[in-house]
Image (tube, rainbow, N blue to C red; front, side, top):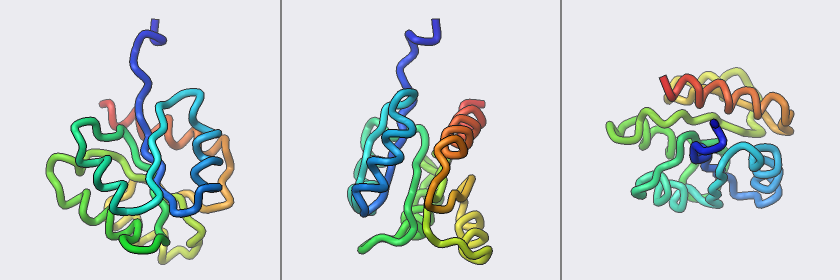
Length: 130
């Protein structure tokens, strides 16, 4: 019966197409994947009439950084409930702390582990649905 429900949508934001391809491959069987290769494009999708259910967000990108995107979304009452998971090569505890302080629900370091990505996405979408 759950097959009748529309798939939840995930926005994958990364300026490196290979990273987008990998995350899409890991998640596409269970979710509707939308992609953005820039912060500006990501914000357009998030502020559209059909915002994503969850965002996987790279931190280091040209133009708007993932941290800035997170800051903007958490400041917006209409969009602040969308869970953001940072997916980044920045591995220091300070980087992780900064991302979580800005409002991200989780922090996954690259190279990613597919089972961990799937588990964390599933967990945060379940929490978001509550």
